[in-house]
Amino acid sequence: MYGDINASVHQGAVQFLGEQALAADLRQRSVKHQITGGFHRIDDEAAAFGQFGVRSAQQCRRHLGLDHGEGAGTGAYNKAGLIGGHATLVFCITIKVGTWPQRHPRVKSRPAKRKGFDVIVLGIETSCDETAAAVVDDTRRIRSNVVLSQFDEHRPFGGVVPEVAARAHLEHVDGIIAQAMKEAGVSFAELDCVAATTGPGLIGGVLVGAMSAKAICVAAGKPFVAVNHLEGHALTVRLTDDVAFPYLLLLVSGGHCQLLICQGVGRYTRLGTTIDDAAGEAFDKTAKMLGLGYPGGPLLEKAAEGGDPLRFDFPRPMAHRPGCDFSFSGLKTSVRRAVETLGGSLDAQTVSDLAASFQCAVAETLVARTRKAIDMARASHPEITHLVVAGGVAANRAIGGALSDLAASKGMTLVKPSPALCTDNGAMIAWAGLEHFRLGHTDPLNFKARPRWPLDPDAPTAAFAGVKA
Ligand code: KG4
Ligand code: ZN
Image (cartoon, rainbow, N blue to C red; front, top):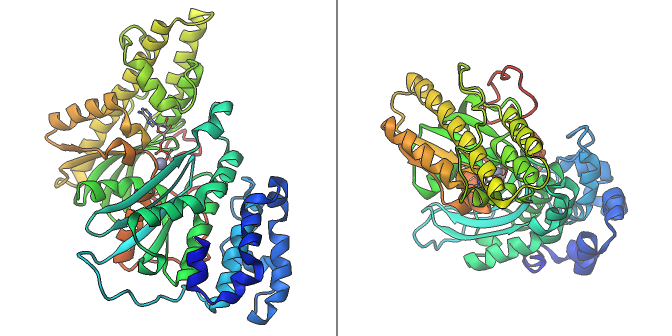
């Protein structure tokens, strides 16, 4: 990656630090130093580059959308320090190519020869436990889609540890981007823009991906597109199946569980949301309770295969409530009580039965709430014909089957991306970036990472809802 960056800017700035120095920042300094000291180094370099008008770490942070207020209470400031190496890279390249402090990087003219497509985008995803990059073009062709899951890093802790995730993204993001570019057979210069998840998600990881994208944008003179991770999931079916707006979306992931009418790019109406746990979170916590380990969702689905879904009579939360909000924490508690009642170690068949009964309760709950949402959506948008399910939990076959039956009973078509495009990946971010780019939407380099970023900012807070609404 540095080779390309070196080639696309005037040599001076990168040589000033040298590849080794940048690599040392990114990989070889102690983690503690990275967390606490990343920006002190920028002060040194700022002194050297004062002639360009950038004089302090504080100024550098501001131009990159990193400041003290961002993500207050989440430790974002320290995590900004963690990616000091990337900040330094962006900083040096930016001032050298002379784009600082413009709001948009200089856009080079597009290469004249294009074979059968008009727009091509690199997408970077680092919001949770997958480091991913992909290249997608506007013929809906996925040129490359490289995903590195952090299962080994988080398994000892039984779940995703934000700091561990951020460090793993930092370690791998450059290599994953380089691989995606190589597999796609394109250079940075051939891209139309670079898109990255800038929220919602674990802020340390989000910053790593967003800063990497900004660095490439500056070096290669390309526009930056800040992508909402949820919109990445929401628009995936337009990449895979060319689904037209409007459609009804059930978005079920590790952090979210929502029903939305997708009316257009950037235009979403939320009909329902979870008031406590997300569906994927319920899978993960239940899997942990059953001793199935991490990642919980797929392991629980596997355990449920030989199980009896009728052995345990778990509740169908919110069944009699109006509207289509969700709640999963009571279901999780019921599983815990059942486990406690059984006492001692559970035999394999009991674990399977518990898993199958839990999965059945989740599937029926999702179906019941989605049935209501279909009626609500049709009242305002009678032309809706497609029900879309997206996000990691959409990879679950039992849930997919139940939703397919629901869609058929309502005269609708269910569209579900392939399992690899349900869970987090770079292609969905590249595609969402591409959709925005071709509408003329790009973002300034100081676009801030957002730990929370609702798709429908006007949606009222759900009754009794916690922070995930
Ligand atoms: O969309 P995603 O990859 O990341 C987030 O945006 O959160 O979703 C991850 C979630 C995790 O909670 C994971 O356990 C769940 O999706 N998941 C599944 C399955 N595959 C992934 N849940 C149930 N069954 C699956 N096969
Ligand atoms: Zn996701």
